[in-house]
Image 1 (spheres, rainbow over the protein chains, first blue to last red):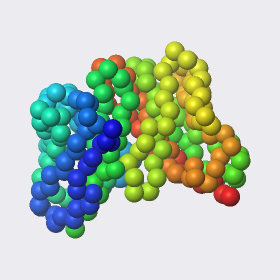
Image 2 (image 1 turned 180 degrees about the horizontal axis):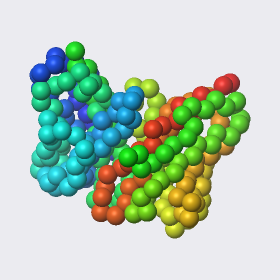
Image 3 (image 1 turned 45 degrees about the vertical axis):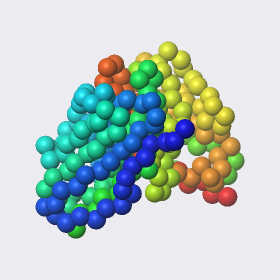
Image 4 (image 1 turned 90 degrees about the vertical axis):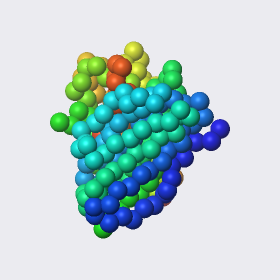
Length: 112
Length: 112
């Protein structure tokens, strides 16, 4: 069974630009969550999608948004990038009836 | 507000020794407590998890001890090996909220 796949693995963007990250969950999993990981703040929850609906949202500005498609694949978008958005963005996939969350390898975003 | 406090920040153990990492939580609605292991350049990997209805869970060399009244839980790594050198995160979630709240992480180094 394939794991959680995140693309791209690395991104370099300029301040003010916008970026879209993609996540394909484990086959059969309908819940996808996004987390931001930085050395200073650690792992912080961004949002969770289940069956194309955002079910929960963390304390991030509106520049951070996401969506989920009917095949459970998810994208997150960050608009008007700031230097502080540089981080490892992680996607986690969860099956419907259990609570184990499995993470992808992440997308390393660098804003210059 | 940091809802899950993890200690120590870093830990150095000799091969064959016991590594102990502690976490404390505040939110009594939490009912699922996983531990994740993360190697550089990789996403967090689920190691072991526990629910409050048991006080201990063991999987191989890894054991979680859980103290509901003290709102604390800990990870014990027996017979620590150099390959265990990684960052370990405790986390918690609960109720209908599928958001994982993470501790700040512990960098474990096992010397050969």
